[in-house]
Image (cartoon, rainbow, N blue to C red; front, side, top):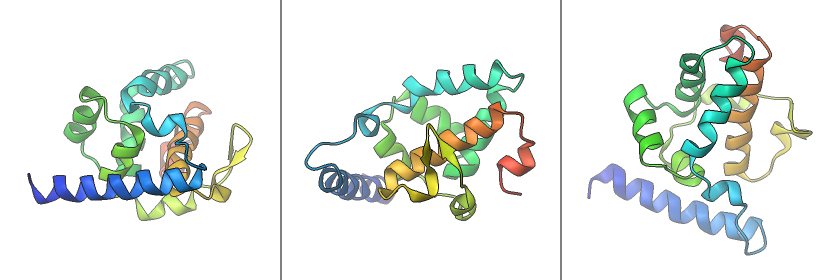
Length: 139
């Protein structure tokens, strides 16, 4: 087992423990949902507004620090959101992501994993609304 795999496993255990405490012994179901099952919905949402799958990949890579091959591997392996973000190196500028998604202000979400998922939702939402990529990526 590589050092990275060990680190991912340890972080996953810590996140799952944290999730159980945060949600009174219950994990929110999105944590155990695969990124691959939600990804097509992200793509469909932006394509309806004239954006591309490549742009969805770009915002995911920007947020997570994954390269394209790593992203594709996580999608192929049907990695859960918990493991996906445990393996990610979140972009330091992610804390600049603010605003509401589904009536929830992302900057006010207390659970770190849920906040990261909301960051991704917010980026995809901004992309679908036609915001310039430079602004979506906080550039």
